[in-house]
Image 1 (cartoon, rainbow over the protein chains, first blue to last red):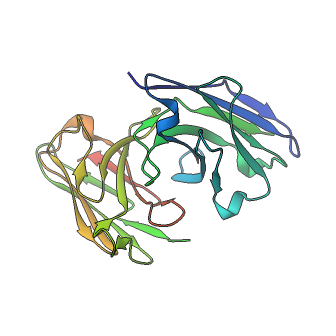
Image 2 (image 1 turned 90 degrees about the vertical axis):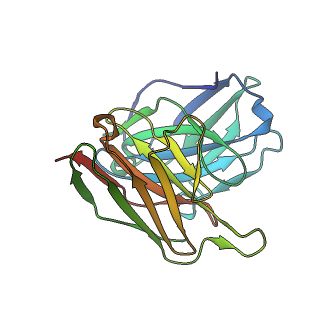
Length: 117
Length: 112
């Protein structure tokens, strides 16, 4: 079955950078985009962007432009999200998910809690 | 960016009754070229990642019970849950993917 497994929780100080990984299995990795979404405690979902693994094409939400990098990871079926210049407001659970180019997310990782303090 | 606004922010419904959640987009998410509405609905239970319920505004994802249905077009959309079950208590969010994707703020559904 489709599985997306994310790296563990992170605690960072303001101004630092973080890299979160997402390992996919159970489907053809090149057939779907990897999308990233975050959710602050008690808040709604916030779209960060997506990466197309075969081409490396990325699309970022304007709010995050210049501060994030999404890449195909070091293994054949992984992707990563790197965020720099961390602020307290970046404290949230970060999710990776897969979906067609059209834009929905049909499978989700378990989430990675990032605390900036 | 396209702004998605859901209403209400929260609602409480009795078991077996119907729940209705609305989602309004700041501009149309209906594509003229393929006549599809670029709108999805998700369910998120406490402590879990979201689960896709509906895409193309009204197409139910595989495995989603048929008591969940989506409707609407252009800028106004509705998620309807018939015969509410206890396991339907969750946060429900709409998402447009016509432009750079954005989510609504979410609607919390509880039991009355």
